[in-house]
Length: 145
Image (cartoon, rainbow, N blue to C red; front, side):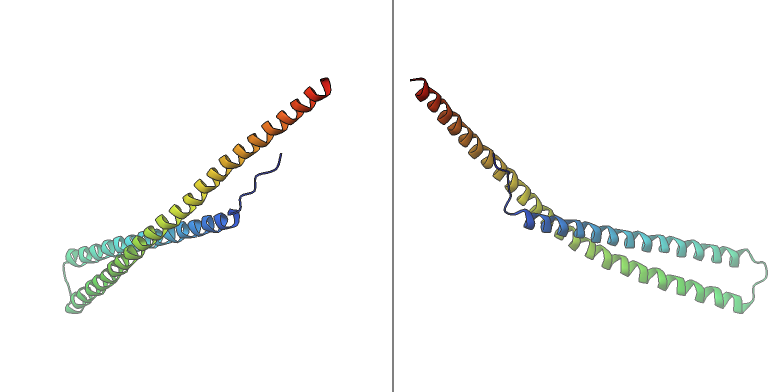
């Protein structure tokens, strides 16, 4: 009995490698998005902390008030920049999701094709085995006669 050899094995391995690469890229983008969101939370907390410090002071100099106002504006700009980066990364994330879906579809297609070839191979093997059994039975019958 011969061994099954899938003629598209190399292509299937490449498709699986591309699928894994797309999954990794997608997870890296998700990680970057979560990092940006965490930075936004930190900036918002710093902004609230700074504001509370200014409000809790009994005597406030004009320079401190100006500094607090400028600090708040800088933090707001940083938050806005991070939000823009998140929007960009989410667009990139959606593109990678589409790419991953396509690569998964291709990989599954080759897996199903392999299964079909295995079934066909087994059918051919069964036919060959039955033919051999028939030949052996016919030879035994001929030698008995």
